[in-house]
Length: 125
Image (cartoon, rainbow, N blue to C red; front, side):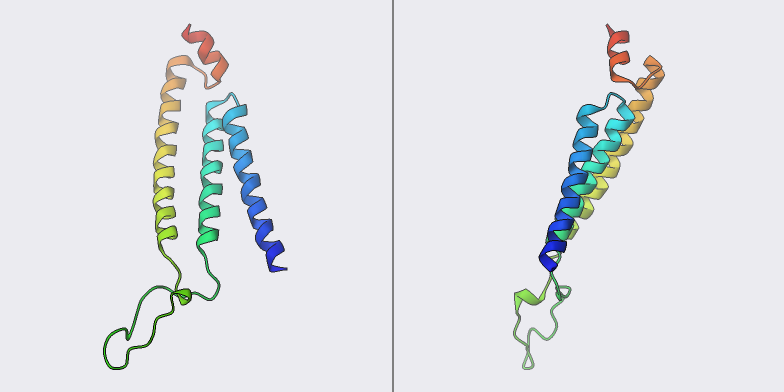
């Protein structure tokens, strides 16, 4: 049953990824393209966070590692924080990208009066 749940969550991530990709490629509205990009980024972040999680793992803070009462270390008992730290960085980059994209869309709307791709192309030629 656990495998079904795991594969179901990967299926959800794949559906979100495809929705975001479809919105970026298939839509003509620039705001909808940016929303699709955000959904795409969220799907990737969820996927990486889910594969970085381990059942019954603890944070990698080692205690009693040195000295006479040192305990042996089993790496399988600790979660790797690198995946989560990288995804935190990806979230910050995604928010920054979203802010820049929306400000550029605002400038395009101010210049052309629309955010529809085909209308912008017609007005620019």
